[in-house]
Length: 167
Image (cartoon, rainbow, N blue to C red; front, side, top):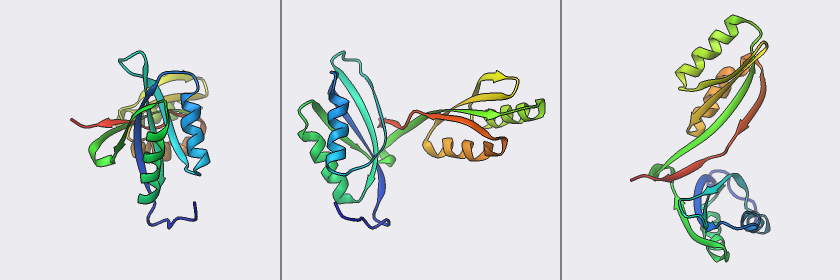
């Protein structure tokens, strides 16, 4: 795959229903590696059917690359169904835990106010830090992280995007 024009690149979400078996995630990830496609984030979890898992893959590329990703995923034996979600037609959420330096009560109070504005929750407090849980679209998570960088970020854990079609 040659260099792509950055103007033509766009983020895209695919969901795949796959057999819930050992090695399936590795096979999907290997297909991306072999074809030189990048995975921005991937989440996997069980569905209401015990034998089926759902993968949500955030990737980027031009239209041709995105078309190839969908075709190649559909060729994999353990993949049952691939759905191409556009951000306009889907609900996208991400979970993020942000641990911040908070050495005094003023800083802790300010972090609690920011968490409240972003509809987050303080999930841990220690003498010198606070951990806030933020759930929402990735832009909201990024905005919270940017706003709180001034406190000093100790650690960030993000789940990656999960999504489903509206309606």
